[in-house]
Image 1: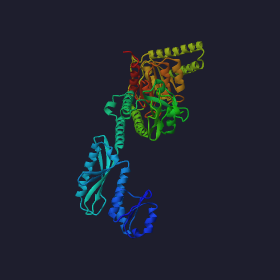
Image 2: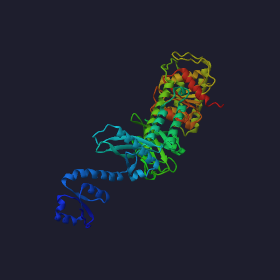
Image 3: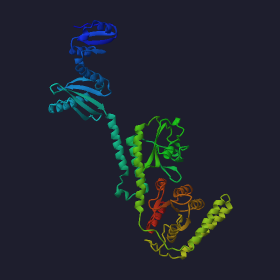
Image 4: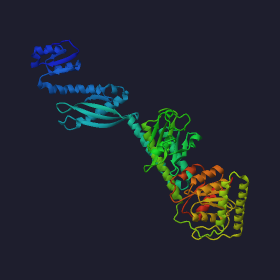
Length: 560
């Protein structure tokens, strides 16, 4: 027997029992809510299922079983509200319930999930009968390459231990899968950047290798990350300057922008290089650190190039769209930057390996006249620098340099080449390509500088020497040379500054840089190779290597 009261908005459900026979209780509850009395727990469940209620009052002996059965119903309510697809499939393979999230997917997706549920239902049924009420399976489900799901399916076990239904939760991991595929592709492209083929590389110089590296970086940025405007800058450890070695989509002005590793006044790239921290600039018009790069840029992404946790440069990407980069782009860029840093490091190591030799350059050549003449050249050059505004004096001093060249030429004409002990090759006659060429040798090591000068002099060249960077720059500005050989590591100025001075004064003059085994901390070779470096000579070297580099450099200036 049941009685109802429509008073109030709440709904109370009373299951028949001793408490239902207390009129004062029923009357008090009726003042608070609508009250309905049912005879059994089964009838209570029907009311709950069809109308719902806010409170259930029942005998103590029925609380636990009723709560369990109501719990199943509330589970379905919960599954309706979660953000993932969910469904219940019976043992006949029919979907008897699905939440709205699952119904939003195309029919082919729902059908594929149903089929997986049927397959797992069969697996559950094939297991030995067990009293364990929990049976769960996890499965990865890929549908038409467009969707991916992590499927969790649990079985509802009947009182007889058989599987009655399965409940499935379909977690949409499509975006996660795509991100992982992209990460895998970037990793593969990164490995390609550092996977140099020894046979191919044996026929490539530093410039060729750098171009191959550039092609790999451009392909990875364009094809995988959709980056079309970016720049790679390497850090000069001594000057803290950031020099461009690779740029795509940026103006010449942006490429030549002078930046240093500093948190103040050197753009976002300078800040990243100084701190080692990546940076996303979502609006360049609102970030005072931003320095002009891509024309019309509105956002940029900058990450450090790290090698053994040390910053060796920066990788900067720019876009004309505001807020074009997010944390995912940052993650991708950092991965690529690690490979770029490693590839640059390997590029330098392989360049060293190509020229490495165990023979130490040595010479017992006596420079009895060459030394004093070189001193004269050095002193005259200093005077020309001190009196740069005195045109008449500079012309007279220049005539002294011409006289020194004449003396050196005369000495060559009357002096027969002498053998050089300990050298693998001795030029016994003048080289037509070197004869009469004015060559500057800049090196702070006397034995290296003087021996190179002697070898090239005997081959027919007119040589001048400088024992530091300042002297080399002064001579470059005051004299004309057909070739310059400069050590990378020198007092006052380094080899890159000498190279840059030659390019400024006489762009047609080839430059060969000299360095000790494995020494190039400022990435001079890589930077200068991008700007027209003629060659590299690694100590220790043989005379034949010296002459080969010099000839190759001079050949580049001979018109075909």
